Length: 406
Image: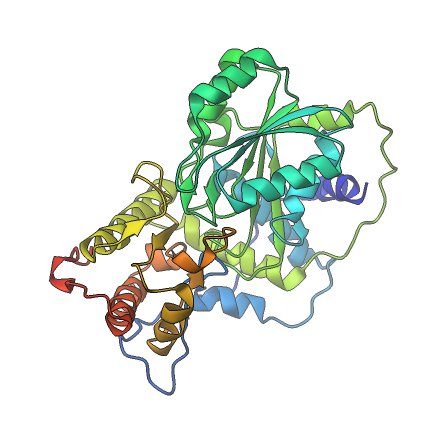
């Protein structure tokens, strides 16, 4: 299949050594709390996210051949840096033009064959989408669904692993529809204990570079992610990281493979932007640990404000809540369609809900990437805008109870 051909072609750049090829960094300006006619609304949805000026500059370079030695080096560097971001020494990252959901197809096309049993842990809209994708490739899918705001019930996962032999298990680390954080570490631990041959596939599209994930230490086999969220660059890149065990599974498929051949021209400028963003991520004080801590602190601040306003998050507890985003139930009598235009008028683009039958009842905020890791004032703008919009909608908020800026 095309996805499998692409995986083989992109292996060629893994041994490239870093060079000095880079884009000059531009300073990130602190943004004012007040919207003026010369400013644009901040995009504070759960992806795409705000990007640094250096990333935007890297994305606006002139046309470059995908065979240019400078680009080849940048491609190789990006693969090496992705290993650092997800904490793996041996897994193989693949960078392909496409959406995060293309990664679902890459995983399914290469690892799942007709009648393979797959256990899908669904915490929302995107867990269901992944299950649908796996069924398209012949997988016999069992879905363990959590109620909105809850995450997977580990006792039910244990029961399934004890009673059925599964080729793979999937967990969505952050389901963007609910802001629920899947417990990847606990799920992977259960798999190693009860069904060590089962592949662990993680949808990390809204999690990678924001939520903690230690690919090798936790025993993850496939991580699917994308460029436009916490990786902090424009949409258009599908990233898949595959363990050596996953690659061996692909090579031993019973279904005949297609011959390797030219796949497609890579998205050169977007990979330049990704390379710049990865450098910025890894340059944070404390490396990836510093990145995780910054997201945790930002999340605490946002969720603390939500609680101080008398509102509830969709995630039922802080433990089950993502640090990259927050989904918030609206007060009675206020719908997403009432709030979102008022937010935009105050300089913030937020997202409505997407759960069937519940979409009008909640809204979603993204606070990942440079919104969390840089002192740019974006969270100040967000919280002030939400408080003002809620007041305009008729919900009284006591901002004096909101946590101070961290």
